[in-house]
Image (cartoon, rainbow, N blue to C red; front, side, top):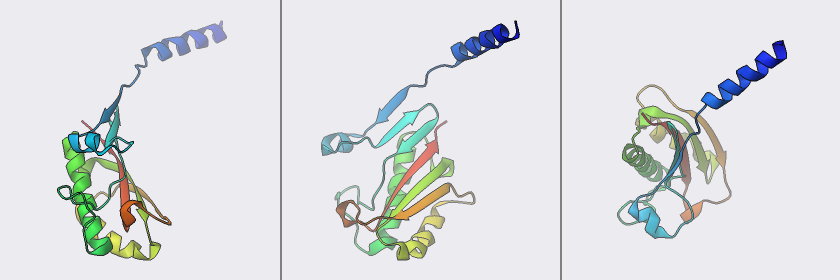
Length: 146
């Protein structure tokens, strides 16, 4: 009898869980780029952003000035994407940082911290042997959407 009640309880619990809808977000520029990825994907209240580079959104080219300028631009790009899809930097839960050269970590951090008020997202970082467009840094984020 105890096992039967456990099975019934599990079935009731399983039937009450609703499936989350997966939404792929793309703006016109991303749709027209021909690149095989979405700008962001949303599952429930979680927003997963694709990796962002320090690309000027108007010229579509990497900003000049190395890792400091690229970090400032990519964090501004991330903030704009978050806003576009209903979130903000203060709702970022996790960032993954890809650096072309791990020795630039402290320079990246100097700029990165200026984009958050007091609570910093969980974060991972690694150095890569090469990034798209020969960028110095790329960042991807997971944020909460209300």
